[in-house]
Image (cartoon, rainbow, N blue to C red; front, side, top):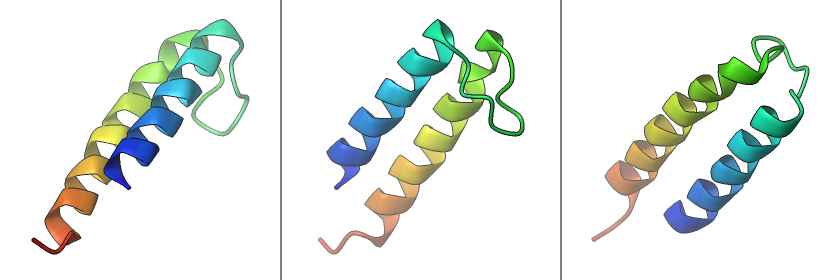
Length: 52
């Protein structure tokens, strides 16, 4: 699950750099870092709640 989320968010970052998504807070190409921060937080959350 963590790998799938990571791949989807990396794809979203690539799309954001090529053509901005236009969502609130993601209007400029340079806003791809916000997706990266969200990706890091989501990955940490999945790892934290994943059963061992």
